[in-house]
Length: 279
Image (tube, rainbow, N blue to C red):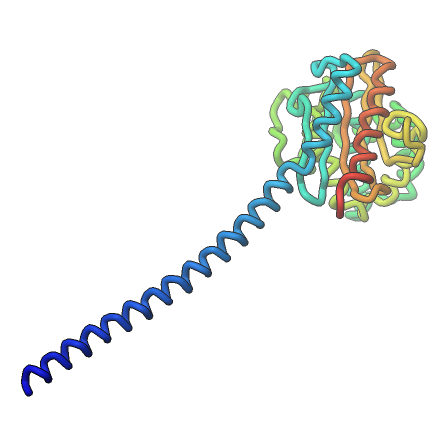
């Protein structure tokens, strides 16, 4: 009797161990399935991030191909384009200084619209001057406006606010009128992010040399500020009419041919953002 009881107890112990093992296996399988699901989700998210990081790769290839076909040396061009919705950028010689010519007048106008919006100046007193400087690129008006701020160095100190990444050193404050494509691109990003505050400025930019520079191949009244002096032909602006907005700054040392290059490069960008990028 004791023998039978002992055997029964042993069998019950074995069964209990087996049952516990089965439960443990099920739990492990359950967690394995969850891990697989999580891994799959992480893969999807990783792919999305990867695609986002490379969403201007095709545009970069088109630009490189254009420069190759036209035999333009990259030393003669500075280029910055940004998708403000994804924060992705393409930059060529982005940190190299280029002679800005009249493109410096865009951030100068921004400073004065800040003054007006803050109540420190009246639009009625400066409307004609600002329009003349942006639309017609009048040099005398521009000089009057930056001298009214305290001179060139004071002007450059003011516009450093628009680009926190820009180091404000003696080189930046020098009177040589040079900007890097990245610096101007960041200033344009500030303009884009606060475009409601600069509504009149953007309207004037659309009246600035239609059918030339960034608007050369588009003829859509592209919002721009152009500049040219000797071999320096430049243009910077915003595309607010394409399916996706973008920011662009182009500096060249190509003489009059630079305007054609500016028009071609912006056309490539405009077509890309209209046809190849989904919102």
